[in-house]
Length: 437
Image (cartoon, rainbow, N blue to C red; front, side, top):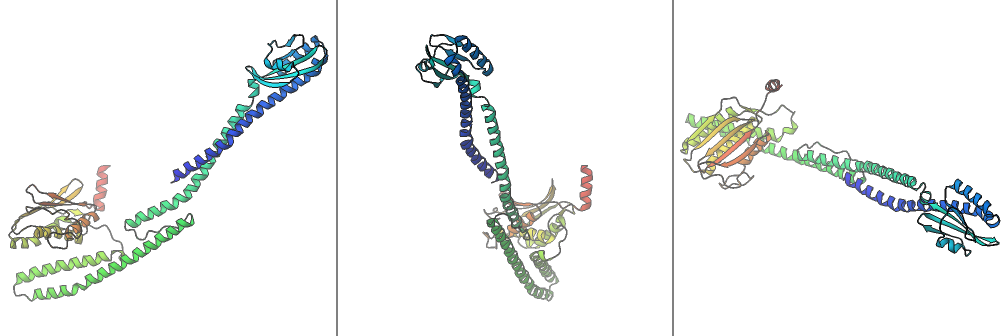
């Protein structure tokens, strides 16, 4: 926008200057020609008394003196055919002046001033002065250069003024764009300072109002989610009490562990829903090796009941990653739960956690029919579930700077890769910088 405004002003300025300076330049040239012609006519008029009354010798002396002073060719044609001064042939203008008519005409040598002198006893004499081209255009080039320089200066001034004006318009628009991007990145406290024209100030106020309204709505939504999550604690407590009353200790322990896991998920949901109302803490980290081992052990019981073979390939821990423990636990449970939801009983699956260059990769692969198309889309499920599992895993990975990938395994089954960013402690970061130096 700034460049377009400057281009528009430059185009208008150039067109205006052309419309003004071109006629002015032509007028300057015309004035210079007329000025030289008037001087030559005055010189010719000064010879009229001499040519009309003096003899040939006096006329010759006067003509030579005038030619030397003016630097112009001066000729006097007497009625008897004698030519005094510059020896030039008679031109049509001279022939016309010999009949008593003075005039000014153009010739190859320049502008020709011819004056008829009457009153001589032997007839009409003619005075001819030629104004050279360099005299006709004397000072015109310098005047044109001054006009051109003036035009350039005016265009530059116009561009400077246009740039300042465009800056006052573009800066508020840039601020609006920057605040809009910050709001899109969930910086809900971002606000723009109204500036610029009244229309832009009105837009800035509307954007600030929109940001405030969004912030209020999100706070209300988080509070509702937190309240709903808190209400789940009561049935969880009842479930735990029912588990403790079971006669089989193994069943009671298994149900208690499941209830504890569900309670941890609810607690994490409450914390995540209200995170903006709590003090800012350090970066989220967790031990991927410990969490994956724990969740695989938990799901191994169900795998054994459904006749599935579980293969675990776990790199030596600890393996810190930049994802909160609750989020990573939910993501691993979602990936393992999908295996049971989308494959028939007895289908084996494998879980692998490995360190790769610059990332930690969790791979869950099965030998089932493969992942249906669009399975990662939130709310989409072909197995009658909520369709949120893979989306939970995807958002957990993105929160830690990673990503989720879906592939087809060599045997036709599904492969889900959860790529996570390794978490570096301050001490490890200092050691890394020291090694790089």
